[in-house]
Length: 489
Image (cartoon, rainbow, N blue to C red):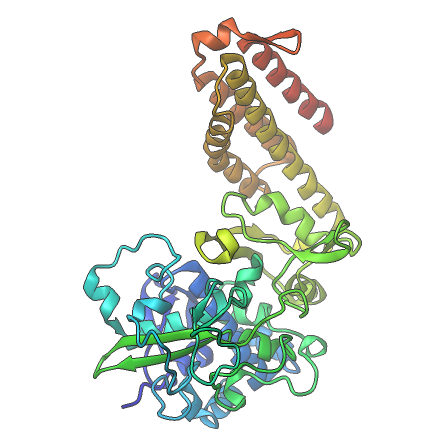
């Protein structure tokens, strides 16, 4: 039995009529201009699948013809078709000797588990699942292929059953080697009007493609239970297809019915030139650290920092630098998307996952004055959030509340939607900085007016020799708004 990803539809893509349809890997690339975007089962799966497409496009076309492809808004179908055809067998999910992203013959003391082991919303350590029992025991081949790509990119850390032949086994188990590569950072990439544009925008220039020996997983020998002898990818092809786990699937005529999931190749997250990571300098640790994903943090808060990284305290994601170098050819506005997973204790559980995006006018890539304006706009919104959370925190203090974090978190969440909309209006040049400031002030005052004030807060209490009351919170709020007024005057 075969399920070749070049022949079988398995990639969910959104077309320009707003419909989702599954495409083969070959069609997704050669016909990328006919689709709007990847529309997988989860935002993190979308990014994992995009990195797979980037690995193929980079290996098949490189960037010598980048300008020609960009002007035609289509990838080189001939080069991609020839490249994939030469490797057809390596893209067979059920190949008897070299299954795609898999390892044959894995055996552990725990035996075969349900296919849910590789599904992000159903495996141990994830959030609760919306799947019924039957959906955990049998997974269609197309969906299984998608989650297989995802598990290599985002799998949780922690101990796993040891596969026979793995030299790391201790009492039948192998200790944690960290999350999949994408779990180590907030993934930032650019989106265009079509999937073809998105691939081209994130395609590395030749100088950033890696050193000799940089090969994707399908050009390497099939993985065995034993890990590779390196934790550092040789380049982007290696990185985008890094085999962080060993997976052996079992199946019947139309579904995956079981999976063996084991540790794979260890990955040193700070040792490679990850093109989608934003880095900040850690003065205490004396090294660059990647920014982690925070679902509660809107993208606009860090957008100015991402675009104007100075090389001293911050490094822009290389995908941003590539777009900046190509800015003269970019004749339309883009979208900047941040995707990621947040992990809990020892990265062995998932606490959150998601994606957020903001429009990225091309002017912000090259115009320093425009980036200064972005920084000023973000400062207004941050200041507004600060005024709101400080107001509620002071109210809680005046009332003697012990849950001093719940109120500020709640009002910050209530403000997020309207403040986010105000920033997007500014980005699209539908509002000036003064208009954004006015909108932020209105949002803040409306939320404060709607905030209930308890009798205990009006009475207040004495703290360190001074009375703190609801009146204190109101005066403080007005003072914070006045500081913003002076800053934007």
